[in-house]
Length: 238
Image 1 (cartoon, rainbow, N blue to C red):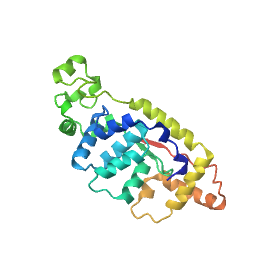
Image 2: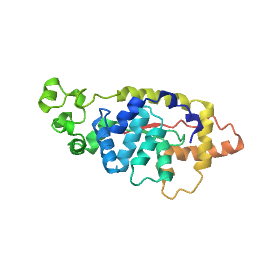
Image 3: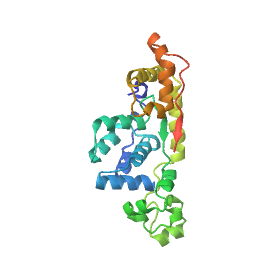
Image 4: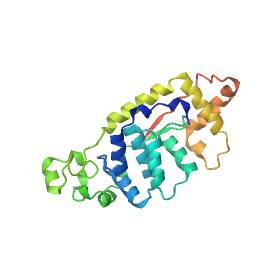
């Protein structure tokens, strides 16, 4: 783990938000459907796993440990060597990977355009028109009444403003990665954990990790105060 990330989220942990995330009551339909499905079946496809961790990490600003424990207990295919490294990578605490932040509404429209999965796992939304199935909080009062779904009562309002939370997360990570010690620590992670032969192509897929290795290894081994020229890892929004 990237030592510079210690203390990044721990003091801001909200048990209220954590419990809402665990139970599928965040007000974001696809996130909630995923968590309810997982809690019942023990399974999610990879992209949905990435979505719920991203939402917990960036939208709710939860430290990865408690969400990781809940997911570990829930996944039928839990494998610690994969799970915990993925939790740290998806929450942005490795220091060597591009930060991938998923937009829960965009993902809902792309992955479940008709709301079939959402309606299966969130019966409160079963009669909501397609035009509002991904953003039920935008329903006018008369449509809430006709669909039998009162937002804030039968189904929760969004517990956070994703756009605002995204700006705050980006600001915090940008500030952290501008710190010299944090950059040196990221370089050390790349040297120690990015040196093995990558048979599956992860280094080629994540260009920033590859860049850290190629540009900084020599400087880091020569000088423990790694080069000032280390590139800041970008954000990827999906």
